[in-house]
Amino acid sequence: MITYIEGIDIFPGYRQKVKDIVEGALFPEAGLENNRIGHAGGAGGLVIVRDLDLYSYCESCLLPFQIKCHVGYVPSGQRVVGLSKLSRVADVFAKRLQEPQRLADEVCSALYQGIKPAGVALVLQCTHIHFPDIESVFLESSQQAWLKTLVLSGSGIFDDRNADVWSDFFCLLKFKGIEIEKVHLRGSSDQWWCPSLSALSAKVSSKTVPVNPAMVTSVSSILKSLGEDSSRKELTGTPGRFVKWLLNFQSIDMDVKLNGSLSGGIDSFDPDREVNFKDRQIHCELNLPFWSQCEHHILPFHGVVHIGYFISEGFDPIAKSLVQSIVHFYGFKLQVQERLTRQIAETIAPLLLGGHVIVVVEASHTCMISRGIEKFGSSTATVAVLGHFSTDLAAKAMFFQSVASATTSRGQ
Ligand SMILES: Nc1nc2c(ncn2[C@@H]2O[C@H](COP(=O)(O)OP(=O)(O)OP(=O)(O)O)[C@@H](O)[C@H]2O)c(=O)[nH]1
Ligand SMILES: [Zn+2]
Image (cartoon, rainbow, N blue to C red; front, side):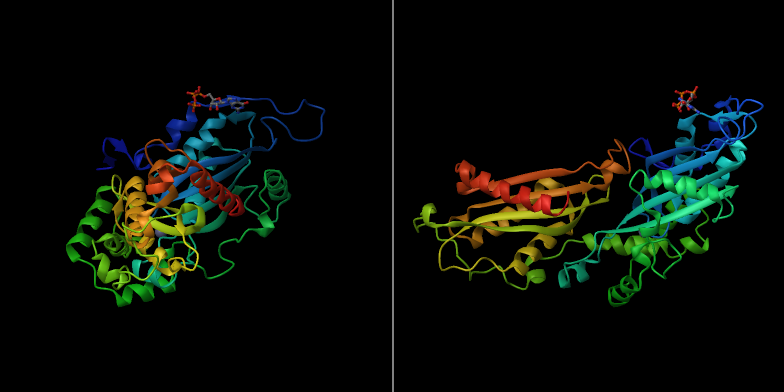
């Protein structure tokens, strides 16, 4: 079974056994003393572990998704389990190709069988990147970047969703900022969890070139090597969807894509014209979204681009749609963030008098979360500075200040 990439086991869950994890970490723990009424300790005292950060891989499109996992259980038989084992067991099932509800059910039932408690409850808050098709993103850039869903699973005394013990569990989660009533529960609408299954995505794919059959066969054989049954209903379309997504990153000719809009028009570059920076203002284009693909790991990274440049009185800024198209053009490639930042700056510069431009790219990298170092919540900023911005510290500081305000107003 090949589950290793670059020496890192990305799907260890297919080989780990829950029994091995739980068995050595069941500890005797008394309940209440004889004449006491109530529940506590190893006999009925609710235990909750909140905010476990996990990740898994979507069985419909093979992209990673993030999970905040909250586990509750009610011990019985005068024994409790080592707290870390709740997370370790959840991870066994997360490190497989998954779908949120199946993941929740599998973890819940494994813990129920392994610990033999009075009951187990599980809440998963899952976040899936929405990676738009290259064609649709050029047409409409206000695309949602993330899809979120929340799933529950319960066994034993949590079998009944109306049981009082669920209220106790939810109350303690609410305490941590999760208001269950306000979260969209799956099943309450016909919305797909994985964006590659959405009606819009199917519509776009029907218009695009059919995917390469040899590539589809290769992805199917990867699924088989994981020990998955590639004829399983949920997996039959997966290789095709993954290949279609991958083909977004084929090299395309910049001029064709941008329809020749890069030539002239604006505050055009003229090296002989003297620039008087005192009469010029800094124009900022902030929070332009982009989607890209890490060339080291073939995993998405996503974020926003901020661009600043000088503009003379009487000149209009570069059309925002053109700037956004340049950003998308360099995004939809196998990339590294530093190169993306430089390429955007170098493409914008010739459109400006003197070519003075500053670009900041802020992104979160799936490869930092879903493999290797597993740094949840981390983000990366990169800067490219061309011309006057590299010597005019005040202008640079002014631009960074605008970026900081825009970031604060995005609530990040
Ligand atoms: N139930 C309970 N478990 C605890 C508490 N404090 C620590 N533990 C757990 O005690 C267990 C000890 O398990 P071991 O397998 O011997 O220790 P370990 O190898 O450090 O375990 P890992 O943390 O899973 O790496 C771990 O699961 C700890 O999380 C506690 O207050 N209550
Ligand atoms: Zn998916």
